[in-house]
Length: 137
Image 1 (tube, rainbow, N blue to C red):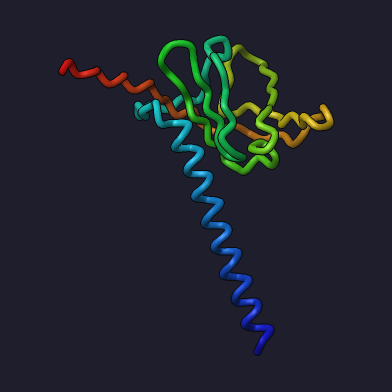
Image 2: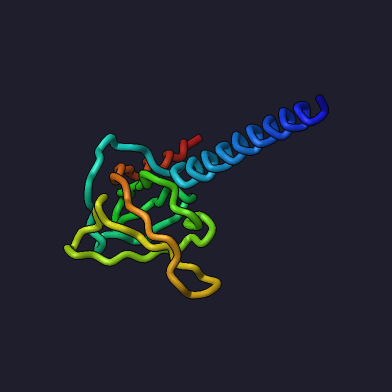
């Protein structure tokens, strides 16, 4: 009887930890997107020459900030192990576009060797929110 209770308690703990991890993941994503609003446009490819910077959110999401006021959220179709920890990746292109069929490779900063390779997803377009006007009182 004690064994079943312990297993049940451990199962509940794992569910709680998983829920907390999902919440933390959502918080990171929300923070990255707080200055942007989704446009509803989805692209298969973006121009690498227009990328100003990229921000790895977690093992599933990369936020590409473009020159100008646009940005793209790429949600990978499968979890990319260590991407969220290393926060660094590389890619090589066969055409002058970064596309949802391309592969990124996690860069392991501790050993300077390549980590896992993962496929990209579609690029969801965001634009910067307009800055709130200061009211003259």
